[in-house]
Length: 286
Image 1 (cartoon, rainbow, N blue to C red):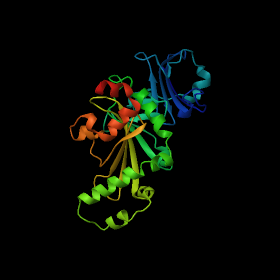
Image 2 (cartoon, one colour):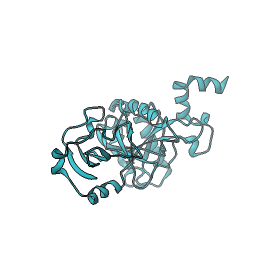
Image 3 (cartoon, rainbow, N blue to C red):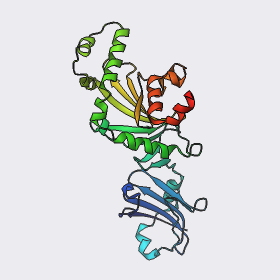
Image 4 (cartoon, helix red, strand yellow):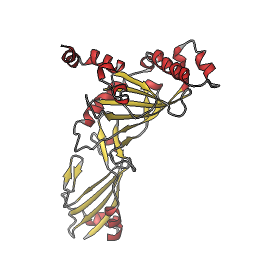
């Protein structure tokens, strides 16, 4: 057997062209026919092919003999190749909307994309994470998440300002429920409610499927805010279409889940159903 390491300076030239260039590690027989192959891309993706996996949706094991004279200068030792072969490759999923998401080091069902500009928050750079995703158990998650993200990523500052009244009310309701603090004055004195966003600091976007009732896809925008520094603020959009919850960060996607009440008693969620799910609305009340 022979072993080679060669830098491939060309990109793939397909829908995964943005993966960048790659480093190839090859094991071949004495005639140069590959028996094992590793591809390491600039963006961190690693593909491995051998007897146990000849091909997948991204490519496959080379089926042509290499020119061993041409590859002579790239030869490495068996130990060098085995080190790469045994190294654990980071798992990933592909989103048509936001690209590659890598599996989180701590939570196997969390998948993280590279931070990107979010128009809703004045193009601030924010990380997007898919939560509770086990691909083989929920084969429709990524497609539905992509649809939700495409809708949300089309929202702009105008859409955010459309939520200024609700966000300011949430702020004042919280201040009314707690003891007076030094920050209360400037928040209570806001006359242009759009200014409330000056006190909101976006951090992450989590995409998750609700685990009960509608079992729909929700986008949860978690933020820091001046009025609730301990638990912050979350803005939740069902299907990426419409705000269906504004609250402190408590891990619940809906008010009805947080307080164990029917969806029909959840004001924002009910408004979504009336606007976008006419069938469910009619079925409930007929």
